[in-house]
Image (cartoon, rainbow, N blue to C red; front, side):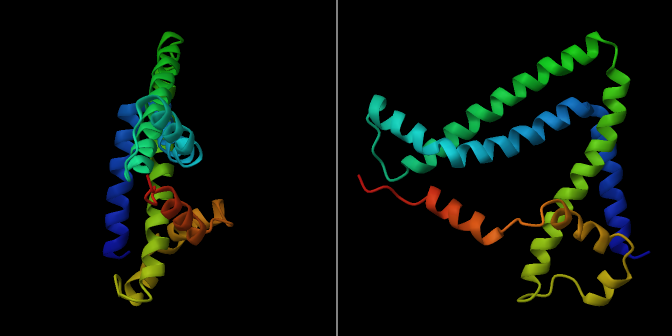
Length: 175
């Protein structure tokens, strides 16, 4: 077991503890809010920009960024309130303990996925800069299984396409 494994275990213990504290519903709602917020802001910020221009006569080069932020915020807040309502139902049905236990599992899995994305990005950047010596990552028990998690869940995820769409979304508008 290498020092990377010890760091990963510590991160997973912390994630499990936070999952227990927050519960499954809250953790799921926060992740869903983030993902739906990003997706919705990319898809619908043009509509929001149109409304801002039409009703508030906003025509600035920052309009795409403002519209993205407003759309993202509305979606995240909406999902948060929905999550709170569902969590209240769990508490009323005396499922609080199950919510906490499922929170541990979900917290650890969510953290593993986030770490996987980070390791994939570091691996792609590692071609240009050395973040981690290869012998250290080879000796690790958890590094490669975690690194393979995100690509196994989303094998067709194209980071170049995502980067292009984000650049298009934040391109300045000519007033």
